[in-house]
Image 1: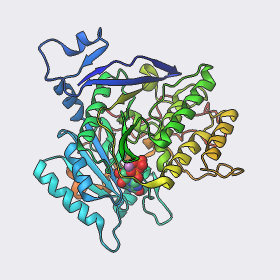
Image 2: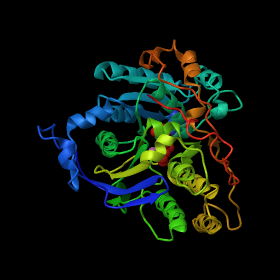
Image 3: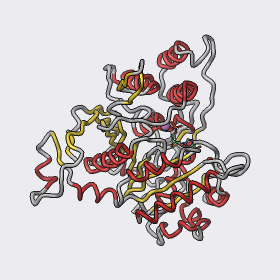
Image 4: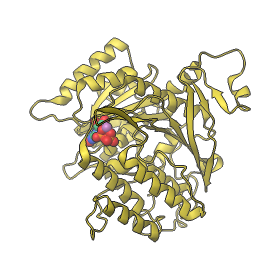
Length: 436
Ligand code: GDP
Ligand code: CO
């Protein structure tokens, strides 16, 4: 891959937001004799060899969340994921009546056999996984029925624990409703390129789509951004501006479903439910590491900082159309997690309400209701106890045998939502999970 280095960077406490990077060549060949990283330091466009991407992918789990998608669509998505990644499919498809999950599992395992891919499938409502969460001290994602709650976010959180237990250093997410296997392939290559660039091992890569094709008056039109994204990005940027005093447009991937994280970062941030999970990454990283409010943070993260990369993909992004209501509720949830943050200033709250009312997402006098849930960081999970419950499951062959490298430390809760809390009384430095 040949990719430009980020032009701009906005710093915020320990956090670095890199500007969008453009891809010049999807495939830039194999490693040359010349040292790739040495001479790339002086260039504005970097060449990342196939081997370097593969090296990252060997340490990466790619998670595909599924809920009642067409099998043909999922098959295409799987064919696009580079071979060396471990694929974790977490499904919340329906089991009553026609057991869609059973059909999915059979089809996917069939593909697994043909491609010899490392891959396994779990169901979000598997009672074993619920028990594992409970035993491990992380019942936060369990509902009243004792099973993992519905939602893409909850599936993602569950799969992050699994990926960690598989010993992976990186975790990437790919939606299962993508029509272009080529786009899927490209996203994973870009995740890998981002991590190759990263100086910190607390890093995140988010995809900024080049375009989203739509039919407008019977012509194909390539829109630059999704409908919800525009508004989410604007409010996130306004949040940054409200602290720096300078207008900015650095954030272009507020709603990026396509994103990847280093495991260290994934374990040390809080999560929120539903479709607010992606914008909440920005919010929570600012809360935890932005230096605005005091917050516990791992020492390692403060040394090299937290890096966000945004990479502009070349393939158009085409996924299942889920209608106006879906976009509205997604946008509302994204706005809610900005609104409810202790770092959101009053003026921005008013701006958010106005924006939602103007778009008819909220009624004229309607207030912001509280619909999203917050989940504490996965430092709360006792990984050993979690592993114990699932060690006889069919996918146990992918789990790391030896958990000696894991220290279970009682993680502290993240910030409380409704008021700014100081965390002076909490022990600093060692209250985070280290992955060796
Ligand atoms: P959008 O693309 O962000 O508009 O949202 P989608 O509805 O397409 O959802 C994104 C991905 O999450 C798709 O692959 C869905 O199949 C999947 N998904 C949605 N809800 C759930 C859920 O409750 N559990 C799991 N595991 N996946 C889900
Ligand atoms: Co979708």
